[in-house]
Amino acid sequence: MPVRYPSIAWLVLGVIASAAWFVTATRLMRLWGLNDAAPALGLLAAAVVALTLWRWAAADRRGMALAALRCPRCDQPLRTEHSHARPRGVATGIQRWHCGLCQYEHSEALTCPQCAA
Ligand SMILES: [Zn+2]
Ligand SMILES: [Zn+2]
Image (cartoon, rainbow, N blue to C red):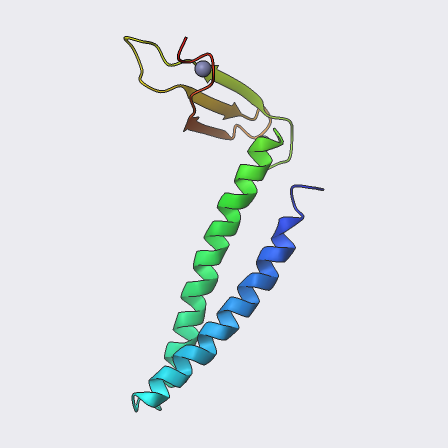
């Protein structure tokens, strides 16, 4: 599955970044004399980093799934629809992705070469 491949890289990155931030935050807290709170705040920093990376990974995976025209939820082929920008109507073109199986819907502003014409 080419769509699922990057999640392993993201997982490794997430573990390394979270661990690094745990160590950094714990050290900083000790430096500032907050010995008791150090591990808790270190864990908090690690959790924030892990959450941020997880959200990036989800956005990254969705982008790759849409580019491959596969549904990010159920991996079925997606139907696409494009509305061109019109000179006196909408300023930007709109690209829509729709999954017939799980009713997944996503739309993004996208101006194609024919939009300006
Ligand atoms: Zn267009
Ligand atoms: Zn779907």
